[in-house]
Length: 474
Image (cartoon, rainbow, N blue to C red; front, side):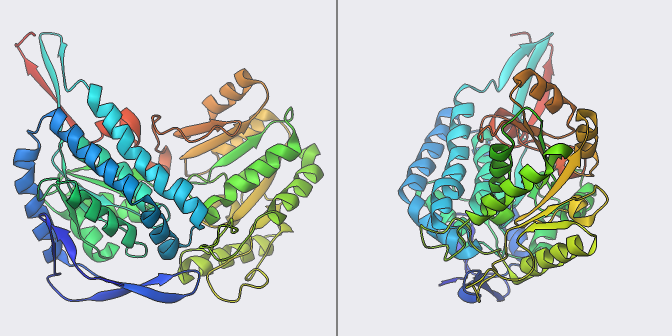
């Protein structure tokens, strides 16, 4: 499957300079598609289209933008199975997970943007004048491969809902679902130039977007290192930068819970999407006296994971996304062994019977100390570190002993106690007792996990400027 054009100014166009990249199926290690890699010239063309479109699109009515969102939602629902299958092929998520989570959660963002837009107060009286919220302008959106469509939707939906225009660079590793989404946008009748897509790598297209003087805001999701680079490039033009970066989330399990059930749930949460989640609870904190119970429960949970062909509904875990990611995870598993952690389950190498594909063995380490690499670095694979604590204060201190602050997790039968512990965790989102995803609540990080927020009204407001008109009382 060749997808060699970019979507710019309402049409599929050839790249300025021909250059192609294979898209590899991580389950087979074989290329199954090709895309073009863009250049600075392609970014310039997309930004020019977005700037022209902004002049008129920013003045559209709320009703008109609601209509565009409804059309996108309708097209998304119609093509959801196709979108899900494409994500399975390009990044390896099992087909059931791609359908029920990857694609469906992406759809949620458009439904949420529709809900927020319908009642959003773009103007309100304040003091002796009016407070206006206006679209920020042209938005450069740079998205990752691990939730390829979810992250596209979490940025595109509020951007176009607020009246902004967009230049999107999806991950070159998993770009095809975003290209299908571009077809949905086109069929929805969004005006030419409002949504533009340029494929390419980070050092070329990503950096051109971050530095471009014609872009008013850049929203980036990815590694902390890449986020630092984006922010430095954006600084010269003083554009707004919103970032959702890495994580090393702690899961504090307090002594009053059913330890076996809590540990098993925590293991499965860590292994969701093959552990390729920025907010995965990769550090499990347990009472020291419950060590043996926790390890036995972790082994039982790992044994229930069904690795295999991601296109099979029987598989609950697929491969990692690439050879580079496989190598990184193997190196960190080796680091855990070298640092003296106890290997509770899993380990080095591929799972039995899976000789092809970037599959790794879901792994649990015990007796981990906060100084070990596996306790400090974001692994981005199915690797869990279990740390023991003696007091609640010690557990909170360990949880906060990290440069990251994206998410936290607390398990406790006493909700008031759980809330007190959650309030002490330095993270942008804390889940109590396995609470499910909530698209209306803000998502984003403290510290080196980023700045700004996504989802719901907080994500909506990221794409708005605030203007005061003084001396015009309503």
